[in-house]
Image (cartoon, rainbow, N blue to C red):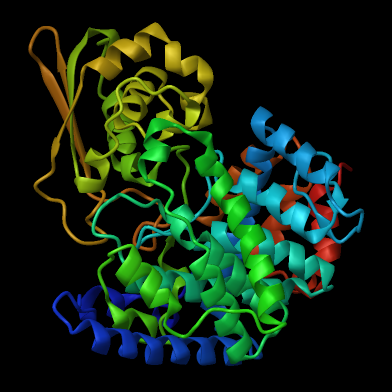
Length: 484
């Protein structure tokens, strides 16, 4: 089944939004309140109806891809230890599944935190193309735990994914950071989790507003450079966000919530973001954010993907030359790619946010997959030498999405000869989507070793299998982690 882009387009976002840089702060705040109220009203009402087929297909694909990313991350040693801690302090209630080889069933908060810790660990989760935001990673850990505890159907889960993603990404679009100083996982994870849990609980618009604005007040200023420098706490922000989002919903139900202007005050006033308030409501119901998600085959920051693709193309043109004979690698990238500048990454996470490492490892190993970002690659002599030969320069073709992530790579050899490849926009987004067989193969790679049935069960969701969608999420979750 292919996505019908005519039913699920994001065109208005890239064409009509105006950055309100000189607006009167009081007027901007009041307008934000009205627009946010309209967004909450629409979201709460939409929870009671069906999704357009194209939006349902995209939401199911995002759900499947992100569960695969959770299972891939679940085997990392730090995640294993963190999961043991969550399970050890859980209440004992058997409410929700942890997506790992063990398939533990624990209380919903512990499950949400365990899955939240794993979901972004390998940099293989889905992302949103039009803003720095991973709407699925922020919503799905809490959403799945709450949905299983409340015995929702799988189709209801897919609908909640689409709507939580919509609300979260619209807030990210409305309040874009002018530079990379707060990481989006810190800025938006609490919002996505609260929106998801509120939808699962079928809150009224007023209660949803209280929960999501309350969660927004508890967002945190995690520095973007935390990822670049490789501090692993960055991977904990989606776990913390899941817990905060769940608590924000609990508190909203007893009258403890944020105010209508809290989101604007947090982002426009405290974080000093830009303001694009049209993004909150333009095209609601006609324009779906899930249509502008992207999927990743390379286990690194998406801003490096075009350069990785270019390196793989260059390897096809070596014609007997050796990559060890490369004297210099020039990478032309957009502003976001240029920020990934670490030459000697200290952890696997920092390697995933290092353009020099991504390019050097891909050049030497011939892959941008998980094996290019293991701990062994950090000290590999050949990769280390190539990292030191990488030079980053601005790319003249860089522009607004989808031209914000280009990569031109030039290899210059010791004899002066050179090879160049240019990728304007990496594959995986709506303009160059991966086909379903490729995404299903990715699921098998990510999950097969630990959960042998996961790829087939998740593929059934992606293809819209009616029986799969009609099952309870509790049954679907059990089937995903089943060992036989």
